[in-house]
Image 1 (tube, rainbow, N blue to C red):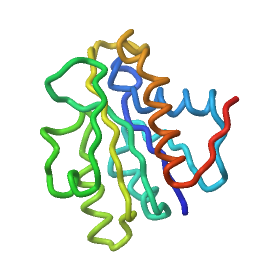
Image 2: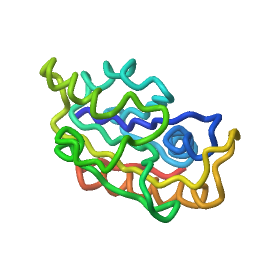
Image 3: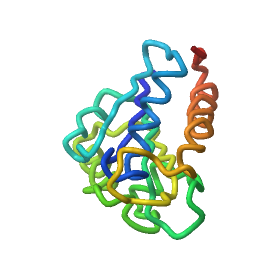
Length: 159
C-alpha cells in the first residue's frame, strides 16, 4: 500500500504553516518504510493533486478555520470532505482539499482512504514560527500519524 502524508500550509503566516512544520518534525524524529511518502504540500493546493494519483491512502495535515480552542485536533474522513461536511474552508490558502478530492474522483484516481487531521490555529500573524499552543501539538499530531500508520500495519522507527 502506498501511503502519502501530506502537510499543507503557508510558513510565513505562523500557525497556517502547521502541516509543513509537522512534515519537518516527522522527518527529524522518525523513520518511515519505503512505501510511506512525506510530502510538503505548502500552498500548492490543486497543483499537488498529482500526488494523490500515486497513493492508496492519504493522511493530510492542515489548519482548520473553525471556532474552538487553539490546538484542538479534528479528524475528517474522505466522505466528510467529499460530502462537504466540513464546517468551513480549511484555511486561508485553500483552493481546497474538497476541490482536489473532487477532481481526483472525477479522474477516477482518488485514493480509497483519505483522512484529514486538522488543527485549530491560534494566530495568522506574519511569522515563520508556530504559536506556543501549536508548537506543543507537534509531538501529539506526530503520534496520531504514527498510530494511524500502525493501524495499517506499518512500522515507524524513532530517530
